[in-house]
Image 1 (cartoon, rainbow, N blue to C red):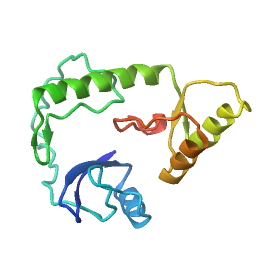
Image 2: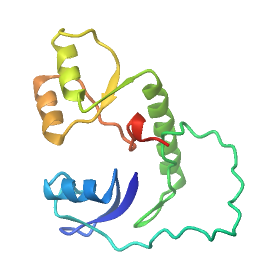
Image 3: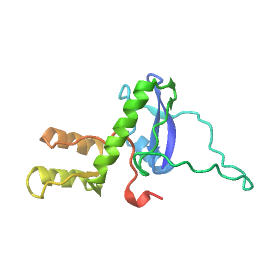
Image 4: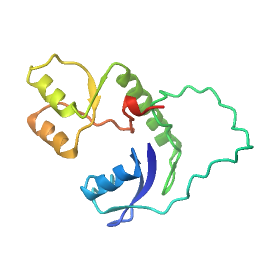
Length: 165
């Protein structure tokens, strides 16, 4: 996964976007699928950001600390935003949500791009109901909502199982 700093050109809102590759970002941007989470504007560009530079080959990595992170698949909640630090209360809420999401996903099956079809089939009784998660386009999600299919977005980015290291 690649994390890009993005900027809404309409109102100047800054936010992060997680993508599989630079090409994925370019494709989604060209299709109008990247939108500002604050105002919904689809005129979004990559913001100027510092590059990640790896350490020298002769430098030792920092020791790994054991933590009680919710899940290896879940990205850590970052205390910094492009516009400033989060208040401690907001950070605590985000960590709680991340933990709840990670627990819920443990009992859910990844269905990938079949999500809309599988959710619809379960809604209409064509398939046995079961907890699932996967990918849906904004259009598919809107259509499911309009049909009364109960769905909810995953609040924190999630990599498909085959893309995890």
